[in-house]
Length: 345
Image (cartoon, rainbow, N blue to C red; front, top):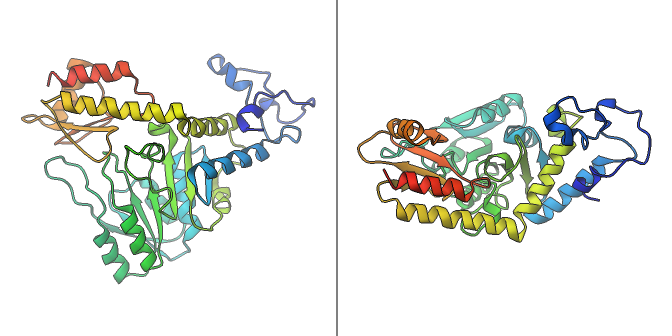
């Protein structure tokens, strides 16, 4: 039985287990329906077995050695990956502008972070890709155990993961890819290549662009390392089964004909916006991340104009450009509004 179906099955026994998970009491009315499916680790329901089966089905969908459901965001996946492949005193190579969880993971592992700076595009004000020759330079000179690369970047810049992986293999280093903003990639040929089947570990946030609840995420592993011991060191022993079930449903939707069609339709609409809105310039490798600039005004001025004059809030802004983030949940009404506004700039 799937985890999704299990939550709606009535238990065969009268439960004198954790009463807060007895599906009878709903203190916060807006979440009444969630209370009804908030089960715990009872013998008669056995959600752990259903979860294990759900993760095995996910592994088959992604073609990985293992795919693990996360309910504490991509941060927990990065930490678990680092703990799984590094030892105290090991060196870990990361970009200096990396997400704080990269640095925290290295600290928790008792390892040492070596950092490098990414080139900033002078016209767009965003970090560019991690260059393979930079990785090769550091791995050739230092005994580095693990490399962490963020791809895509927040603004949708893609690094050459295949080449970087080849360099890591040459130097016997593990490769972890923070693909938090690329959870849609495995399900469309019109999006950049996912690292899921390339890197040793890939972390994805379902909750950012792939329709997931906050903070659902995935940890994919392609090397024969069991990530459970690392996760068990800091994750709760009382997970939210409604959130875990939502991950199962989320993956099934992404892999369905309907889900794949929705992704491709979104890309088609965004391509149309790019072709119609001549007053804006566009940049980036990921079509779902609409990075724009307007000649003659700064990114901050553009952001303020969108917010104050047109009622549109962007995701991220710098001195040169502004980024509007799209994904599952960006409906046609929103896209019509975006096209209307950008055509006026």
